[in-house]
Image (tube, rainbow, N blue to C red; front, side, top):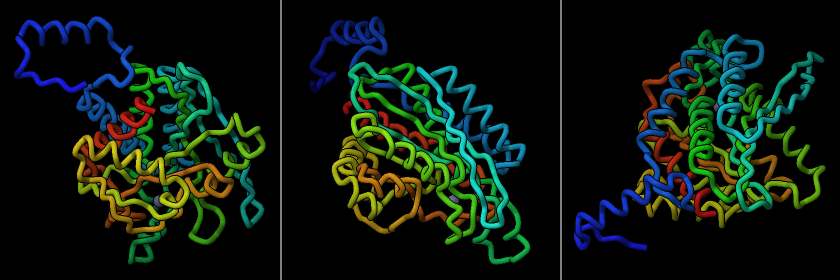
Length: 311
Ligand SMILES: [Zn+2]
């Protein structure tokens, strides 16, 4: 339906507005207040930034888990915890946990999984100064922004239920180990292995991962593993961005990124990642709140919410 306001009398406009306000949250692809959710997500990102580094064993890790549990209890139909033990190369054992928010939807069927990692990197390995490389990163964009978008989506899905069942997955241990150590993507690997044991009709039909989506200077290119694994899903996302006039979604491909989508690709679920990898503060101690913006979070949120509402 296309409405031209200038052809309507003010009475007709008033009637339409009244209809929307009388039946909130029931329309299928109802318009929503994007600014409101941008503000909410920015609030979450400020909170995460205030926690400092958030990897297993830190105070910030305990705090982010408390935040996830509290928001999940507030908005999700159910919250599931998936603890797992990681044995490191030196024999040390660590307990990590993925948190899952369940939204049942009204239509039933296989869910869509939207994922982000909530942990932050314990060392700033992209710093040129060897001393700085030992410091943990604040992880406001890398670890924080995806988490904030998922928390915003949790509130949105409570306030604007969609027919499509949705699982919001907060992965642990994405950024834990050194590159090539096999100690990265720990939470998503664990979850993919768990899902592989399920009958096919209980597995997610698609996986969409968000990571590093808060950059003020947002530009999201199509990621190449995603294009091969989930061409229809990525097109659905980019079509939605185009309809919303978000030029920050660039149709060109630029990078192949290893991220939490790969474990799901390996066992055949169409899976994509939305990531802005042109971020000079990646894995540096300068990955701080001032490099991010509420508008960028809002753009990515708005596209995903639009895709979910129309699924
Ligand atoms: Zn990272």
